[in-house]
Amino acid sequence: MGTVRKRMIDKAFEILGSNPEGVRYSDLVRRVAESDPMFKINTAHGTVRYLQENCCDRVYKPARGLFRLTKYREPGTDQLKEELVRKQPERVKEEEFYKPFAEWLVKETEECTKAIPLGGCRFRDRWGTPDVIGKRESMKSDIIQAPVEIISAEIKPDTSQLVTAFGQACAYCLFSHRVYLVISNKAPSDEIARLDGLCLVFGIGLVLFDSENPKDPDFEIRCRPRLQQPDLFYTNRCMKLIEREMFS
Image 1 (tube, rainbow, N blue to C red):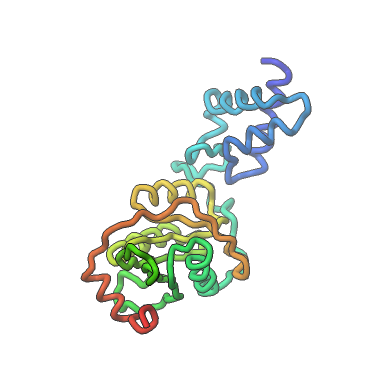
Image 2 (image 1 turned 30 degrees about the horizontal axis):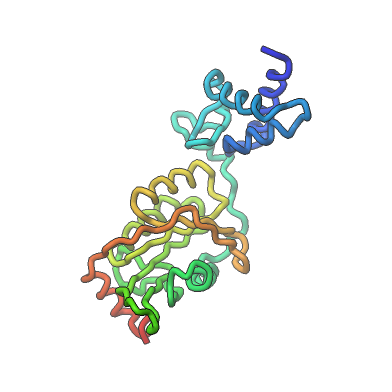
């Protein structure tokens, strides 16, 4: 093996060693190539492929395109060792993100013509109440009038509750035309990748946000929600409970 290739491999391991959660393929290639003027981008691509094919005892992929050292792997799983998972900072209350997301749905994505923070137990059942709910309806000036759509969102800044949050978002499909799952961008990369895939399968929108900054959450769409046909019995039952806020 050439001296330059060996140095590039050593650099790749050094980068992975300082990033226990893992590094995406393109980022790893870029960082290796930029670490030395003698390193070429094409050789950096080959170096990362070499790691994948020949260093399985030291490197593994917990998700597509994500590289992580095996020494950071929880034995018997593909998960990051529990002691290496980033601890939640002093927690910002989840409710502080409800209004910013409702405004973002209306003003930024124009997904809703009206959206309101909800949360709590407003729907009075164990299947849960969306943190934000909105509606999308045609303007009076529109020539073609579309049916009213209901949009629901589950917001979860706590990265230890992602599976629960996904389950709640799935439940909202019963009465919503579109559903968003909104999670912290501080979540481990492999868990974000899993949720990205699940949301594509189930037609749920996935949004990442800065869970430490309620004044500027910087909402970012990873995948858009698919229009679905809910059970209108449940849609009407839920809307009856918030009729005054949503339709007056």
